Image 1 (tube, rainbow, N blue to C red):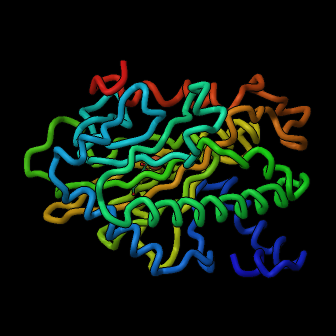
Image 2: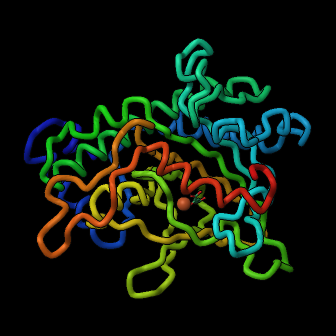
Length: 311
Ligand SMILES: O=C(O)CCC(=O)C(=O)O
Ligand SMILES: [Fe+2]
């Protein structure tokens, strides 16, 4: 990312071209030189661990519910990323955009707007908010690269990502048990719903990406990088020019695994419609325009229905 941050036109294009090639191909790429400090990344993993190690009773005070605005604690087996399979072997904690209690969208109860359900873990909130802001900013820089590569104004996405429906998600996968329910994985096969996901993992491994030629490829841990992938919302926005690729987590036996994902979805009112230049005579616009919040809602509900966390 360094050449992109340093400001020159040539550097920005160089990074944008590499990112564009990945987005049009496998839909996944690693980002280095991103400027998110190692100390902050380590602090996030350490606070996440502290939270997941806390008594179930403390964790359940922040329990995710239909009314919690996609925020809070999702207990083990609370979610099926692949709703046709057994629930995922993981627990998670979701953090959304931090808004004050008197924010008009909080007061009016707008969809996906709610107060974060901060747990009683010292330093947790400040660490998570610092990290949320750092990866949000990096996500906006990635969108500057997308815009450059797609040939639209470099600031095109700025006002569509100014109050995003973005979720920071802490994940904990227990060691894979000897006897697994049929088809049960750490995280079932799925595509992400937003525009782009920025994933930090520990060194344990287990993320797998489905290649276009039908093979599961391991996405190994590379120190000091984020694994980034295109989500369904940006795929739709680009009229399928960029690809949202299925992936899954096969938790390794005998080891705990932690990861931290940041899902950058657009502002609720942003209209997701075929970008200029993404439709041609042979490939006209495939999808009708949709609001960011309507799109997210259409994708989010099925993953929780089995567990009864939302109905
Ligand atoms: O934990 C991981 O490495 C990936 C998780 C993931 O793909 C997701 O939560 O969408
Ligand atoms: Fe994912």
